[in-house]
Length: 46
Image 1 (cartoon, rainbow, N blue to C red):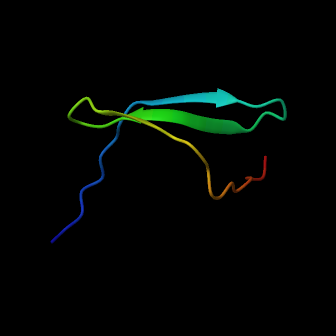
Image 2 (cartoon, rainbow, N blue to C red):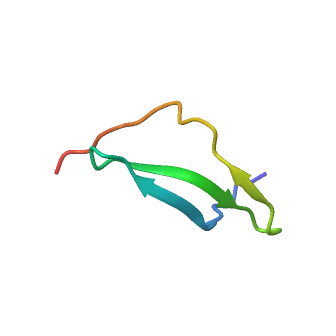
């Protein structure tokens, strides 16, 4: 079965160091999920 990429709305905020953290997302059926913790943060080069 082929996987399909789905783009969903995300509410996010910047912390004091400028890192963008997701707070909640809304799935296709309008269900909203709060993100309680972020397991991995990967900083990119500028």
